Image 1: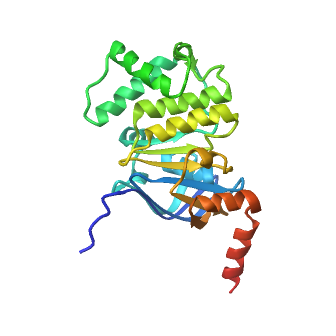
Image 2: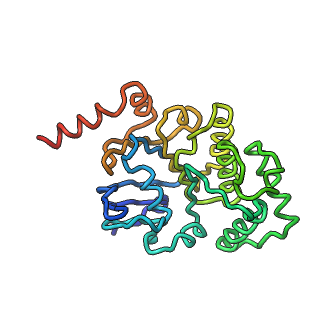
Image 3: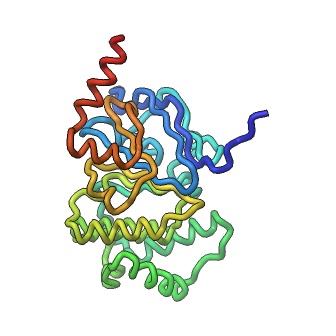
Amino acid sequence: MIRPDSNLILEISNLHASVEDQPILRGVNLKVRAGEIHAVMGRNGSGKSTLSKVIAGHPAYTVTSGSVSFQGKDLLAMEPEERARTGVFLGFQYPVEIPGVSNLEFLRVATNIRRQQTGEEELDTFEFEDLVQTRLQMVQMNPNFLERSVNEGFSGGEKKRNEILQMALLEPIIAILDETDSGLDIDALRVVASGVNQLSKPSTATLLITHYQRLLNEIIPDYVHVMSSGKILRTGGKELAIELEQSGYDWIEQTVTSKEGH
């Protein structure tokens, strides 16, 4: 009898997906276990961001075949909001602005919905403000940003800190961070990375999508995956990211093409 892997959080099997009838993912396979940090790297257009959006349930993307299992459940059968409540968090490459919606209220409502899912009591306004103040320190964020509309007028770095603040409050089971290092200077990158590291637990997992090895100097991955043409071509450790930084992607793609030719 084969027993299920109790540590397996996310399992992607032969996943194919398209947008506007254009195939993007062409057979992605990936397993992410509790306590692990995975990095996905690749050129623009390789399918990295598409993978993150498909996991989160973005309606513009159509899964044409394959499966995605989250803690043994069919993730693809869940609506996007159900995935979020269950513990799937997506940090956007370009966080959207929501004019007229208080950042504080947005965070409070989202946090209480997540707490409801995990069987915890809702926090009243005062309890939540106490909690959010401690989380603000983690991302070194000015409390004044709580009184503004969600991301409205925020710099790129402030938006990314706000994403990690959301992550700190929602305490997801798996956090997918889509190019969270994009547009950050080195100081902001270190603050964001520190927040991610503090939030990593033996019971949770993180999937980092990035172009650059510099993020992986701050958040050390257990595995590095290289994507090209909608597939994961190679998996290794942090040394693979260093090699990519030095040599680019051509050597991996040529190696795979050469093997397929034989």
